[in-house]
Length: 332
Image (cartoon, rainbow, N blue to C red; front, side, top):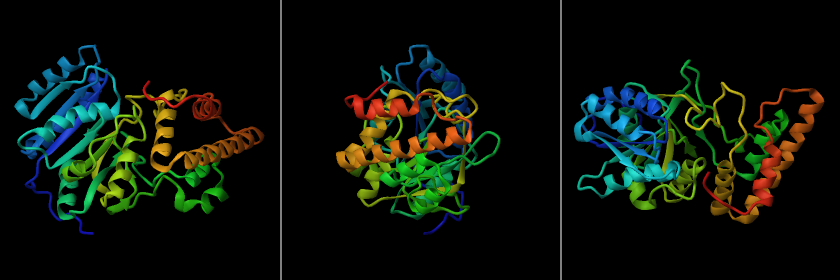
């Protein structure tokens, strides 16, 4: 696998897609971080899809684009409803793909991000030099500079057991199935990259379509990378591309600075749909049982050893209710 040797402007166009829902301040911060990239990359465009915020977010974001003097390279589309991550991104991407000059690449970017200089061009250069790479992900960092988890293996029955049990010997035995991948200093092929900053080659979208709108949020980028893999495309983590991620700011689910919140129903719905739609009911059931067994075992150890409780409230109860006692559903 070749690595980029230059950061000069490549003959490629990129659409940055950002979904906003009542987070105008975060989105405007992301736009300001992108301004330097807009000046360096003539083929860069930005579209913000507002998921029916109803709080004037779209007007504020449009005004900021005008202040930055982006002209027709900056655009705001009104989705009209809060359909989630996939619906919003698809609303931003679909018109661009139907335009006379569709983008060569689509960069999905969370509103709670700060793109570092050269991050977008680095991904573009890497993919131009490696034409079978369909998706790439950046090196995500916390604001204090710590590395954030940003590339992973696909979820499986064994990964559900390892993740929920949290026992050293089990994790060692199941190491090859652990979802989290140790991040190297060089580009590496991975199963999937986080959707907070994910570059997609247009040919991938042409072949497998847009994001699955059944997902409200969570697991949609995992499924998309799996779909791409099955179509013959690879996903790569490119550490030279750096993006600061204010993790959890727009959903609150993964904000590590606050006490954990109760896991929302749409998280369970997305997880369930991912396993059932990609691996079938039997595998989904096995994954659910493995998770329940591992988590129940962990809770017993936690009680005996008096470990602090860092899990969302009612996590096991909610998991059982949403996976075994509630019909499948999506949305908030």
